[in-house]
Amino acid sequence: MKHEMVAIIDFGGENNQVIARLVRGMNVYCKVFNAKTIAERPEVNNAKALIFTGKADCACASGTIGINLPSLNLINREPDAAEIKAFLFDTCKLAADWTTDDFVNETVAQLKETVGDGKVLLALSGGVDSTVCAALINKAVGKNLTCVFVDTGLMRLHEGDEVVSMFKEKFDMDIIRVDAEARFLAKLKGVDEPERKRKIIGEEFIRVFEEEAKKIGKVDFLAQGTIYPDIIESGTDSSAVVKSHHNVGGLPDVIDFKALVEPVLELFKDEVRKVGLALGVPDKMVNRQPFPGPGLGVRCLGEVNKEKLDILRQADFIFRDEIAKAGLDKSIWQYFAILTNVRSVGVRNHARAYGHTIALRAVNTVDAMTAEWVKIPYEVLEKAATRITDEVVDVNRVVYDITAKPPGTIEWE
Picture (tube, rainbow, N blue to C red):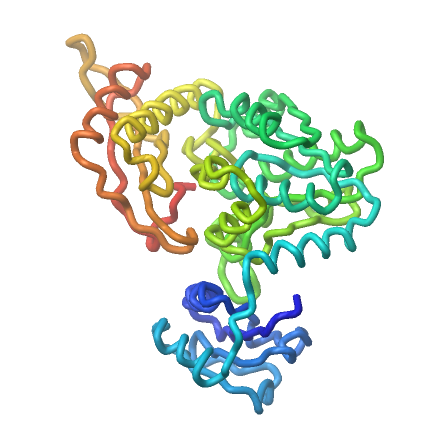
């Protein structure tokens, strides 16, 4: 991309992505480079300025990188937005030339060059990331794009029908729906370790896409909606693994495609939404509540099976329904239910019951890198809990998660 770039040189701290978000939010393009490996990244030499972040106890690989460039030292310091703004525009005189429209135009041009006359299969979930990818790739290659929606059996109540009908109504794209519930649940049988579940789901997705590609004919590229937080949380050369996202750390080593196409790979969630609006994607699709790629598989703790999933689906639907009825659905970034792997003693029909515990979770965030729990009114929580214990078989206890990210993550697995 032909823009002024700021290189964020990361010495292994925790603030690199916060700083990147601040810089991007000021319409300045930036990339994060690991201090240990920047000698292998020649594009850092195109930087107009440097920001150093992380710890003082890590040596820079090249030693002389950017010696003549203006730099801001934030090592062992919390980022300050005013200080960064002054550095970018007062010290460096940068032009703030990175805009959403520029990203769209340049990404479409890159896709045309990369894909050429080849065919692309897009892993479509219906979430904002894959939806925006679909819009970008469709703009670039048109009918050479086929979207495949895999109904894994790990979706929310009625979600498969809603996603397919929404896309057929709003977009002129080829969409294939694959019913894969039986094969996903068979692969997950007896598995209760979270990372193992994510990797199984990630690999099975790829195998379904490979099979569908063979039915379509020669498909060169697999496209998916990987975004920057997915990369960071799945582990990089400068960050530890938080959890393997099914489309990153969950990918198998060998896939039967020429290459992966990931148009929003370097964007944060809020940037993806802006791109979607710039492409004319309807607001209800752009601002749709995020849903993890592994679906309810990471909200059903312990072993996953259809009985537990059906319990979770019903509880989750009730919670979301009560949030909407209270008029809170537009003000909460993400809200959902978790089927914990905990049973507790309760009373039902004047007799002892030993039922499941449902946890409710609601958070607000900008980029999913950090999040705060939402203070939902007690009466709304009470209505949701009462309905869940009354209407969902074998659930006798509901709890509310009031943990921020960090130390928790948004999802429980």
